[in-house]
Image 1 (cartoon, one colour):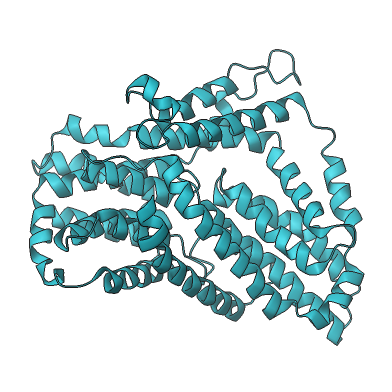
Image 2: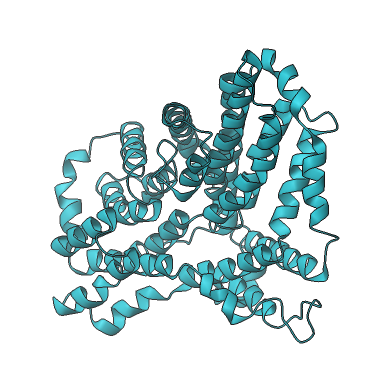
Length: 457
């Protein structure tokens, strides 16, 4: 099992072959070496966590198809910019807008939408392009906008269970490693991660203002900002359609159902179904409505058809399944007990020492590997380390899960950072320096919130 784990992890990290294909290796290797039967291990590739991802992603495809997310983003920019288009407040809009959108749709899709949207604002800023102190201020502000989008997208994704793949990896591995333990609900995660996300977005904005938009530069930048460019783009979307209203309504209903399914031990609508219904059930129900309700744009056409589902990231679905299969093999083979036994040197290590080490190590690793692969590799190990040290597993597993999303320093770390870097407005030293500061503050906030707000949830 240890050899299988090493093989799969090396191929995930190096991407020697496509990640999705590597993720199917446990389907072959675990039965072949008589660790788990083929039928049993195949079930790891379709469980409630994976249906939760599939259903919510289908709904996100509906939002993207009718550009509802773009309308929300543009209105956010107009709201924060105000009539005068104050540079610092507009920059806050470029942080808050992407963070909010990425809570509900994929980080990559949010970045791909927001970066071109910012191009219109940046283009007007850089005209006329004459070398001067004023142009330096404007170039720095353009850099801040792009960095703000790249950072905020990743921060927003970590605040909800479905916001990013690492959170779903955690949910599946938690349920696999501790099947008799209480599940982590959508509301519990949100109540902990949302304040963390808000604090990180605010720090990101303050940091970018200090570095790239000092008070002395705001008159120059303000004189070049034009509210009409954003208004024109919003006007080009036309009036809100029935289809757009419907997909947004379905998304709001889905979020409300997720948040209210389990409210403590005796409240929430889920108790009427005696534990049979989970978040994945709700997600799939909302997704089905998209294939039933007409869009009222083309006669006979529904809000979505199957051709749109070809955009589903099936490689990520297989990555989830591969991670859950490895976690099951980790336990079934006895490797879990072996690792726990050999981690007894940690018995006297306090949580206050372990947590920062875990956060630093995982957040450093995730700069060079995909966030999902990092979480899949580390979470089973952290579960065993916590058990060996008589620490509640959630304290280390959630620390590792969130730290896996702290990939801010390199263009190769995540697709949003690659999209930001591809604009040409960001230099590598800028990304490394500001990304390091944001990562450091994120680790400190995580270290402070886990034993306080985390324990209360």
